[in-house]
Image (cartoon, rainbow, N blue to C red; front, top):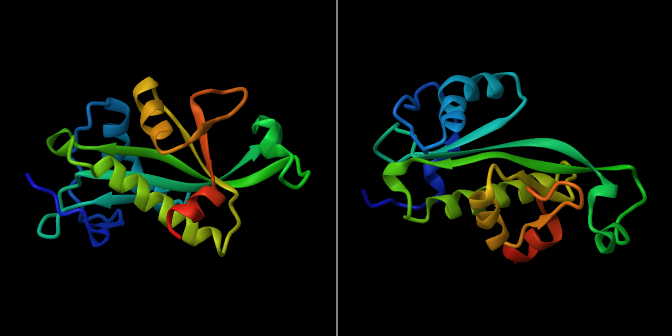
Length: 172
């Protein structure tokens, strides 16, 4: 299946989206999309966004965004020096990102990440966030995010962040 990677194919999750066949190879992510994502959206604890082809309701990829905070002490010392001396700072959490096996290797993961970063940048202009953070599930996921210049927190290496200043430069 050849994908049409256009931002119009990414939308907030709706009841009409077909999620039952989604399989990214991770049972927890599959179950989240099938059983929990709509509830999280309705309760406003996460905002799930899905990728579908224009002519189909079948979900081929998804990500979630939510607001969060991070302790300043977890940031690298050189970055801490540049920030206000607050105990915690606001961030956007990219909680989950997954692509169906049927379309893996076609750039959808990268496309979803860029869309999530752009959406985070846009929302940070109205609701402050100094970075986007992710919690890599494993070394493969960590490598994916590091390819896009995400940095590790001091105390939790699989927890990564990309400062909003770098995201601004991506879209300049």
